[in-house]
Image 1: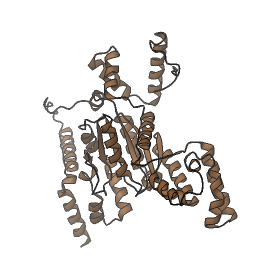
Image 2 (image 1 turned 120 degrees about the vertical axis):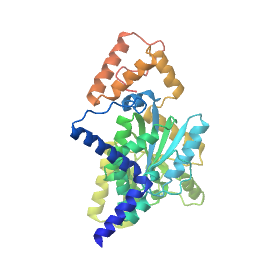
Image 3 (image 1 turned 90 degrees about the vertical axis):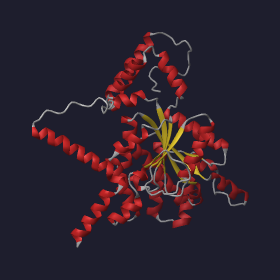
Image 4 (image 1 turned 120 degrees about the horizontal axis):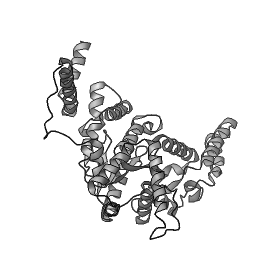
Length: 387
């Protein structure tokens, strides 16, 4: 009975349209192996079926930018994506949202790419008997194994700016490798400049212990993602509304945003969980380490504040060194290279490893120095700066 049950599950999975592309891939590889083992010469490729070199294909696309929106469940990631797309569209940019959450069936926006077309958390739970957390981790691992499907979808999206809406399971960014590997693939192989936008609920500022937990989550996620990271305290309009009702926070806003005086929260922890010697020493050490690293900082955010929306846009643009498509095309025209040579040069750069890219940049910086001063001197420009 157990064998028959597994066979039935496999048949249902194989007949599902979400796994048809994987079957085609396996059959195609099997046919290629049969031809190789038979010793017969490979048939000549059909010119109509020939595909472009993927690196050249990516180099031919305009430079693209994006944000991976991460954070715990309920912090407003989908709402942030919708509001940011509307705001950037109003600024004249072409923006696309990519739903990376296989468990989010009711998104508040129209997404150009939906990972639920590949794998669904509900389907995995029903088929494999996993719980929600196990199913979401299985889905992300399955996506990691089938990144070709994701690239086929993304390369047909003509927007220059991409917003990736990720799931809210925090373990994916704290102690799991699938999302980290996906970020590296997008940045290194697909040449999309990304920053990580981490959202945390500002209601956690009401208690010192919850806020310190947010600090730990933010710090670990920054290290794990290995991307330029922006940390926002969302729903800040609620904090302002509570302040009008005499329900304000116990400390000034700068204590929660700049973290310069975050040690003032330690006496509050004593009141919440008791002034135990080991507990106080533990939290004191956490605060000291975070302040010593000087990497973490929070920014206020609310979708109802145009000023905070503009601030979030400017921070993200600075993190990814955003350049508009018009300026990018102007740079290509002024480079002195025709279109094919420009693409070949970019493709050669994309195939380099980190050391080779560093040497390539040093040679480029040296060539600019030999050309003499810039026609539009910028006092803040230095030859060693990497844009």
